[in-house]
Image (cartoon, rainbow, N blue to C red; front, side):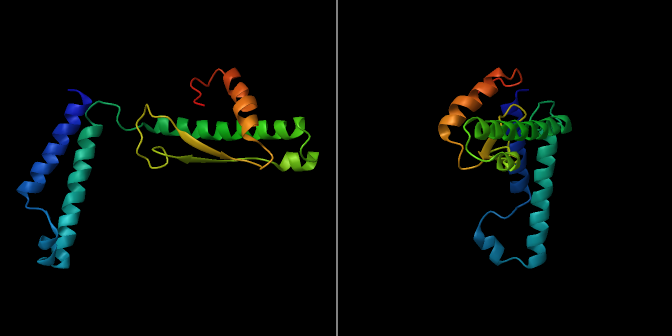
Amino acid sequence: MALNEIMSKTCNDVNNENHDNNNINNETDIDDMDDNDIDNRINNNSNQLDQALNRLQNAGNKIFESEEMIEKRRDIIREVSKLSTKWIQHCLETHDILPKEDIERSSCYIFPFGSYELNAHFESSDIDLLCVGPKQITRDMLFTEFVKILESDQRVTDILQ
């Protein structure tokens, strides 16, 4: 069964369960319920969501990442951070922008964002990273010197500019 068929079936199953169980469908239903009823409905919906996600996970498709892939992504982010810091220090030294002791303390910060940071990515998704470094590093340095470093690294496959 194709991934979209599994997801469609799972969504239909959850919708049918919600309809069969007479779950909350609009705000007026909530007005007539006490706190315990609302909590029970929320827990029921949460359980149904967990069951649906388990069905997707067990369907044999690679929707969710394995622990190995999660760790690989973390390693990639750490490696990008090291590479970026090394490049920043090289640029500062090459362009004689800062004193040597300041260059040695210079680094960058890497911030993941997008689907990866939201934990809404698939195994085949990319990782969006924001690199924040010293103000002396220019966009021109990034799009020329850093790109050259990335292009020379055999581990890097796709560079979007």
